[in-house]
Structure formats: structure tokens, C-alpha cells
Length: 394
Image (cartoon, rainbow, N blue to C red; front, side, top):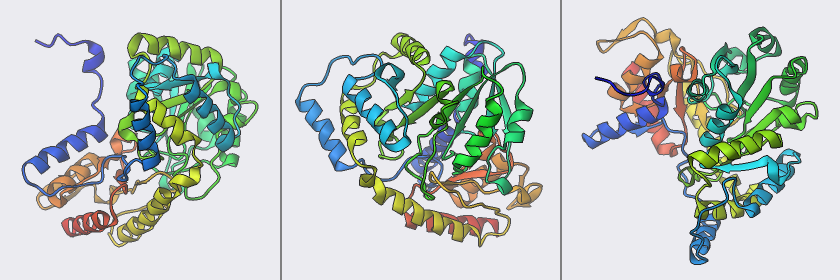
């Protein structure tokens, strides 16, 4: 008899983590799986950051941290926001959390009441929808297309708004599509939101520095949106610090205070050593991580060229992050090697079992026609993986 709560029974398992677990199982069976499913840089954390952590250990940082983060880290975040985003936050407006995922969970918990709608331009990061549902909110998916670089238009936003709309959540650069909203595109969305002063915006900027077009723009830079925007960021992607688990928000102080209160009852403050290391990371000039961004850009060219040789893969050119999100719907209804492909999940599973390449179904991101392929892997792995996919599909 299932004694678990309805809440957990209705919660989906993270598709990216599920695929990574499946790939690990197959590796344990001796299969040579190439993992292109996880959004995790394959670089080591830069030495200057690791040395700061070692120094913090030697200085005996081992006590509970303030719930919303060390003051010195919050000051570094404030300087980073000013330097990189032209945003002016104060100490009470910053909350440091155990990863940007906790930042998002805090926001949902303190902002949403049962039935409140949250607009999610599709594709969206895999956990947005379930984080919203956990707080009794209602995800409202707005479908975009590859022809528009997977970006929501002002007209689509306007059409999705109802009297129940409380928030809009989006990422730029986007996980999973790599799309980057320009200043003009964000202004068009802001012009719609101007008419609805009770709608709040979550701008997830975790991939901010992995941007190949240059010129990242934040929604909060618009004066008329600043008091309604919660800017979410962290160090996992740009600094190759996924396991260090530090994320943060800049927000109106009443929202930040609420997130601080929520976090105080759930986890308290984030890890002391990781926080000290992140001070050093954020104080460094972004040019210190340019070598990683340059390598991702090379890999993007490589994977797009290789995928263009496979019939039935329709791709756009992502402007940021480290994913491609090809439309593979031309395979739906076909039977390959005795397996019928009905949807993106079937296709992704086929690639895992037949090509031994782990990807993620687009259905997890709100798009049923695509799959996500991460190129946060070596160029050799990318070449071998795409070769295997091509062979399996031929």
C-alpha cells in the first residue's frame, strides 16, 4: 500500500537525472555509453577558485553560515551584478542558496498560491514545471518553434496572460535550446508586462557567460521592470562548479526577505567552504573563464556540422549555453531496427540502446518534437557520439 503523499506521487522525476542514472546502469553492465545528457561542464574548477577553498579550510571556516549568505559573498554578488549586468542591488536584496535550483524553489514557495499561473515559454528548463506544481501553481506552456529560435514573442505572451497569471519564468541563454533573448526582444515582452503590474518575472541567467554572440541583457535592466524581476544566477556552469552548489538571487527586498525566511526553515545557509571559494570566483574578471567559452564555441560548430550530415535532424544555431535542441519529428512513425519511434522519448531511448549515446527527450522540456544534446563533452566524444547516431539511424 502506497503511504506516500499525493505531492510526491504526482511529482515527475527529473528527466536529465533519470537519463544520467540509466546511462550509469548501462556502463555498470560494461556498455560503452557516451553521455551527452547532463548539463555539466567537463572542465575542472579553475585552480584559483580551488585554492581559495583550501585557504578557507585552513582558516577554519566550519561554522553555520548566515541563512542568506556571508556578507562578503553578498558584496561580491552586488559588485558582479553592477559590473556584468548594470544592476544595482543592496545587501538585503541578495540571497545565497544551495544552487540556483534551490533559489527557484524558494521563489515558487514564497510567491505562489494555489491556482496561480506561471507562464513558461517552451522549451523550458526541465524542473521549472514541477517546481511550480510543488507550490500549487499552474504551469502555462507557451510553445515556440525552431524557426523563431525557440523564443516567445510579445504576441504569444499577451495571449497567454489571464487574470490568474502571477509570474513568467524563462532562461536566457536558454537551457535546453541555447537561445538568447536580445535587448529588443526583452523590451517587447516588457511592453506587454507593463500593462499587467501584478505579474512578476523570474530571469534565470545561470548561462550568462556562456554566450557566443556577446552582449548579455537582463530584464531587470529596464527601469520599469526592476522592481518586478527576480534575477537568478549561480556559479555551476560558467565556473565549472556544479558540485559546489551555490546559486543566488537579486530581488525586491520583500521577496528576498521571504526567501531568506523560507530557506531558514529548510536548509539554513549554504556550505561555508563553497561560499568562500565563490567570493574569489565572482571577484575575478570574466575573462578568466574565456578559455572554456571559446572551447564550447568550437564544439558548437563541430556538433552542428556533424548533425547537418544526418538526414531528419533540423537544427538552429544556438547563441549560448552548451546544448543543441534538434527537431527530430521526421522520424516519428518510423520503425528502425524493429523499434517504432512514436515520440521524442522513444527516439532518445533508441539512441541510448542502439547507439549507446545518452541524450534527453524534449518532452521533459515541454517540447515533444525535439531532443536535447549537450556538447559539454570532449570533441572526440562528440565526434564518436554523432558517428554512432548516424550509423544507428542509417
